[in-house]
Length: 262
Image 1 (cartoon, rainbow, N blue to C red):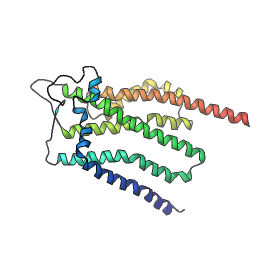
Image 2: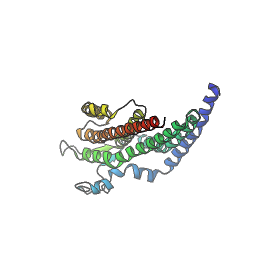
Image 3: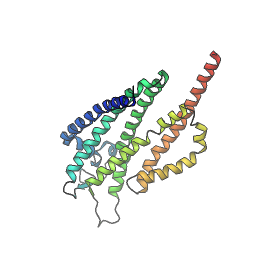
Image 4: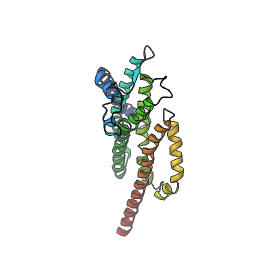
């Protein structure tokens, strides 16, 4: 196939995910009530995370943690469209990467296809794990801390819906990406680029780098959210050390078997 033939095949591979994305966006937009019940769940005192965390749902006569307000005329419509598109995009990502994988499959060797399939599956699971950790742990804890903090009783908290949505979406994407760290470590270890000894040697440097990265990527500047974001990344780093060590051990075992068979 010529370059233009490959380009045409790529266009065809991307056409269906785009159509699915648009259809899911329309569906999500039409399901406004259940959509925002899910998005605004962390602002309810009955949210599952608050029920199991120390202190329960906390004090307060209101069913919500804080009153969300709208300060711009078109904001609610734009947020409705933005959230609908975001949810549709998250649901479309697995199908998009599956189509791209199908497009690239003919150019891969048999062993490469096997590893590519595993990496693809692991990537999906890791990304959605990051979304769930943010939805049930990081965002609720950050929200509860930030809305309960006051410099004075004369200054009550009224949070704009735009601020709430932006923080939720930003943290979700960032945690989904950060949870890909073990996947990247696995790929680099498969090719012998990364070694567990290297990760152990630079562990302290990595922890400092993680704190700096968390300070950059978090949408708020409070130390509480910074630590909440940093802790899962530190655990992911330690998991990467274990994955790299296990991969090295597996590679060495396969090499020994190949040498003994020869």
